[in-house]
Each structure stands twice: as C-alpha cells, then as structure tokens.
Image 1: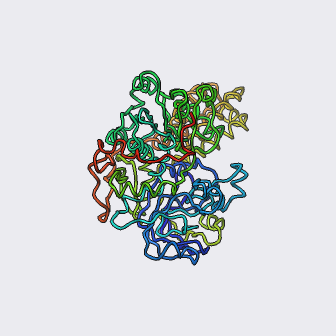
Image 2 (image 1 turned 90 degrees about the vertical axis):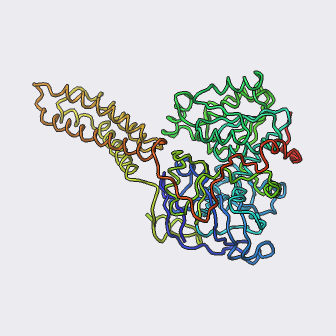
Image 3 (image 1 turned 180 degrees about the vertical axis):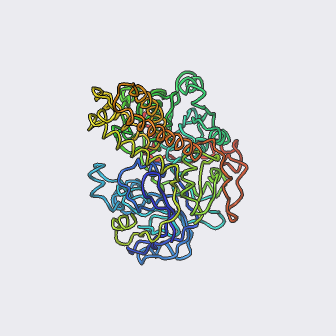
Length: 391
Length: 190
C-alpha cells in the first residue's frame, strides 16, 4: 500500500509499504477513504516531537471502511462498516477509560515502559505520533490497523459524507473539549488564540455552547475571515495589541475564558520579542516550546478565569509567569482529547444540522500529493487551512 | 536508509518497500548542504585558527578567526533549523565580513596574497550559493508565492461557499448546545 512516511525533519515521502495485518483479536483493518493532515502533524514535520523514527507512518485523522475484523472485535464491527477512527486509542476497560478519560488510557500505549520514564505515567496510545505514544503506524495510508478496534471507532450513520464526519477523529472533539473545559456561562467572553483548524472548531463550539462573545486571534486574513464567518470578533495581532483589544472588548476586565489553540510553535515575530528568545533557545536545545500564547493568556485572563489548552506542547517551557496564575486564581485545563467521550453528542449535532465541520476544508487531494501539501499547509500558501487526503 | 528504517519496525508494522516522492525540494537540500558546510568550516576555524592565519598571512588574528568560526557554526545551525533562511541570510552577512577581512589582508607586504585572492574567490562563490539558496527557498516556501491551484478530486464535494459551519445559520447556532450537560469533572472550580 502507499503511505506518507516520516524520514526526518521536513522529509515526508509517499512510500510503498507492506500492508498491515491483524495482530491481535481486538484489531480491525480499514481501507482508508479519507484522512487529513493535522496542525499537530506539523510538529512532527518540524521534528519537534521526540522519539520519531524514520519509517514511521504519519496521520491520526482517519476514517474508512472495515475490511477485516479480529475475532474479539466481531461483536462490535463487521466488514463493510464505515468508521471514523479516534486518534486516541482506548481499551474501554481500564480505570481511566471507565471514567471517560480515554486520552490517558492505561492499556493502549504499547511503549508504556518508555513513556512512563518520560511522562512519569504514560498516556494513551495515539496513531502516528512517535514511539512515546505507542509508535503506532498512522492513518495517512491506504490501509490502517486499528488496535482495540472494538472500542476505538465511531460508526458512521448512513447519509453522512466523509467530510461531515472525518473530523470527529480529532479536531472537532478537540475544539469541543477545549470549549467544554471552559464551562462556558451565558455572560462569558471566550478568547481563542489561533484560527487554525482546532481554533475554528473551538470557535464554533463556544458559539454553540452560548458564550456572550467569542474573540479569535490570528494574523492570517483567510483564517480570521473564516473565524468571523463562524461568529467570532477577530483580532489581527500584527495590526493590534491583543491585550489592549481584549481589555477594550471586555470593559477592561479581560476575558473570563481563554483557549490556546496554538501550542508549542507560536509565530515568531518582532512584535512578540519573547518568541525570538524562545526560537533561539529552541535552536540550541535549551527549550522545547515557544509558550508566547500561554504567557499572554495568563496576563490578560480575568482573575478566577479558566485557561484551556488544546494546543500541543512537548516539553520544557521557560519564563512562564506562574506567580500570576497563583495570584489571579486561574484554572488551567489541558490534555489530549478524550475523543469518544464527546463523539456521540457531536455526531447527533452533525445529524441535526447544528454544525457541519466540513466548512474548514480548503484542499482535497490524492495521497501522492500529501508530501507537498505538508509544505503548503506549513507555509500557509494558497489559503490552506485544512487538507483532506483521498488515498 | 529504508533498511535502517525497516530494521527498527516492530513485527507486524508496515515496512518500506519502495520510496516515493517527498516533501524535500532541491532548495531544501541545498540549504542543508550549506548548513553542514558552515558548521564544518566553523569547527575548523575554532579548532585550528593558526593554520588559517598562517595560510592567509594573518598571524596574530587567531582570536578573530575563532570568533568567525563561532559565527559560522551558529549560521550553520540556523540553516539546518526550520527557519533556514535566517541562517542563510546570516551567512550572507558573514560572507561580506569575511570579504572585508580578506580585502584588508591584500596589503602589499603580505607574502600570502595569492592565498588571500584564492580565499576571496571562494568567499564570492559561496556567497553566490548562499544568495541562490535563499532565493530558491523563498520561491518554494514564501507564503506570498503563487501556487498552482490545488486539484480538487472529482469525487470530492465542491468547496462550500459558506464557511460558517452552521447549516442553520449563525443566529440559530448561538447557544444551540446549551442543552449540553458539562460533566462534573469539567465544571469550573470557582
């Protein structure tokens, strides 16, 4: 089969690889019908996430048709089923899964011993996201082996297109969880940094959950335009002071809820001098991440507010004003997404017509064009916001 | 490379059979080659500055050569980073500094003038390569660069004109999910 394979920094190739096979009775194999490039794949593209190896197959936003089912998964799946594959692999039976904390499943990370040493205690296995999350081959491929498939799937009802449901695999529940973590009240202002795909989903989620106003922060016109179409007030941080504008829009009090949909690779620019220092430290390996957005959120958030962080961070961050967090009584909520916890509800909302996540797609291409699309997505060329690949 | 990659695969995981088209372009490869060259040159300058000063008739300038070596290493590291243009541009500035230093060494009394001329020619060549690589990177990765419109596959639905994401309209969407019950462990703490 063909698959997008990581060979090193900024080196992804559309290789021919051997087909996956059932390895465990709980496995299933799907023929991938649609998959997508996620913003967090760019961290791998930039080699910012440790423990990637040449030969790793990329991708964690995948759906397709079941073509083979292991004996223990036959009660839940059958050949021909259309399923979306959550990016967090979950066993469904450990203590964390029983609580709905699927992204920290205690069973699914097959490199648990290594991950325990790095994280203290390992999180769940993820598709295509380094050895630290299990080293599972990803779904930017023609076929995918789904471990714990009896649990790790979302069945697609008839009548819904791939584009309507594909993002149940990651970005829609991720944006939703970020908004839910804010426990939005009708009088709340929710400020969202980053208008990439997760930011766009967080904007729609905050609107649906009834925030008084949603404010979106970015610098790219096409992303700000899409945010405005979804009901957000926009701030271009290259034109306006984020802190001044947020204070203006909240009567000088700051937003109650702040969402970081940017993560470890904040835009580096002279207007954000801290990012220059962070970038220099990254080059000489003195710091993993550029936490500009975290610093800004901590500073501008209303006291007793909530900071929700769906953006990916990989390791050490410097100059984080934790004294402000403590003195302002801020709550920080973060984590990989407990995808399955939200997808029944979200699927119903898609069916009811409350939301159609396909709005975010700007490019649909074949798998062989995937490597070049990594460049176009990363370079933000051609108005690229979300790439869907059709193997 | 594929052999090595396959050797680290777990049993059952897909192995590379044939390598296909990749994301690295000629400009990226050139920038990387320049980055490694820069680091190599810098290391030589830092570890053996006397050889350099002797060859160019610049005795007593070992400290300066070491500093230039450090600059080369830093530029090389930047050229290998995700912002290679920063490294290449710092190299172009460095090339100008190198050229100025070599021009000063072309004084009539320098017995190594021939070597200096040769070094100047090399600096000019490398500077041209740095500029070429930087321009090629801009052409490939610059946000403003015109790209051929991406092909939308025939079986894919047409791009939606409405980017709101709310099929029933924005007004109806506001608060439409207020029926959602926030789980206990996600409720605000204050």
